Image 1 (cartoon, rainbow, N blue to C red):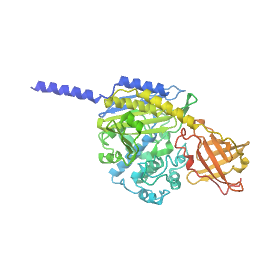
Image 2: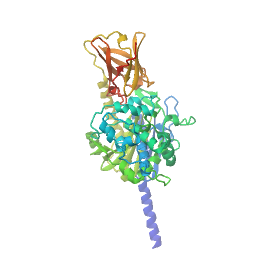
Image 3: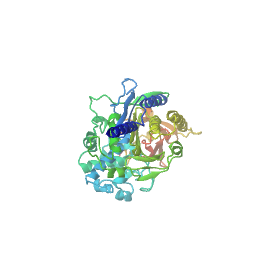
Length: 519
């Protein structure tokens, strides 16, 4: 009888063991990754999959930089961009567990200097509001204070929020915004007594077993050369494009990591806050708060057709939706030339992280969907080809829409000297328009990459052509003149919003001449 029991136990253990790794066919997954990289022209990618507490796949593909040809491996660092937001939320969850704050604390109780345009929002904004994109600010509003590569300290960034006009009522609508997470990172610093960077690295990354991961590109040791450079497709070829992994985004997007270490983060999330070491990072009670929808948005018809999405929302640093009847938690992260994607299916104890050094999100989504297809035993579908067709059609339409229609009758501009002045915006600061060699130049004084020339378009409207074409962020600048042809103000907007990244929020600027300027 004992032998029979032992044989049955052994058989059951074999079955259980096979179920642990049921989701992953490593050979098929590698084929999907290489197919996706080829189809979307991605130089380098790294993928890790966690299932039932085990890393069942972790590998790098392709190259870190086209010119160097150095290989990507599972230790190669990428900027995870907005996947940082979940770390910032978890940092606050840890402080809640420690009794140092509550989710419903007012922001001004911890940052007395915090102000929003609406006094009611200033008074009522809570920690939850910072982390759930429901504060009423517009998409990417104020991002020019942190992008691209600005010199503004966090104090100036937060001070500028008071000048950003809301686009919806407080807590009424989901609108993605980074500055609220910058503010949340400063709450972490103020409450913990450590900078956001120090808290993330010392209190989170170290105990998680993520020693190579850093809370900012500049914090990567010079000795570690194993990091990826982004690549931007333009004019039929890829162009390497280095940015500092959004270091100025701080709590909204600054972390650099690799799939080997991100696997520990996935394990911890799927274990309700218990780290691989067995110690607790945050409690299940706090995870329930982070994974609960605090604001909802309309479900996508296309997403319903693709995977039966019936609801979607945002928790605290996490996107939440249903996927074929399962709760799916995740986030994407984007930098010019580099994107990342994290996906969790708690019911299946499944986690997926994909990092890449090209900005085609669909390449990452195709891989994620293929893994989910196997894990959830769904009908077979060629996700790479399906998403590629949609991606390139969408891209084609975006660039067609970006074409500028020239006016039939062009009005002359005033003498260039009329526009050449120092201007200021309440939340961004100064920009300088100067006349040089018969042309107008523009200098965003806090952003080294935002230098360019003004090309006349019509009347008192010009197009700003940036020196760095890979930004794909050319913008109209429209000067409002007085009856005596003096500049009263200037406004800007992207020439091609269908192509330009939303963090170039030129439309939120209101530029006025600096009165002390005598030019």
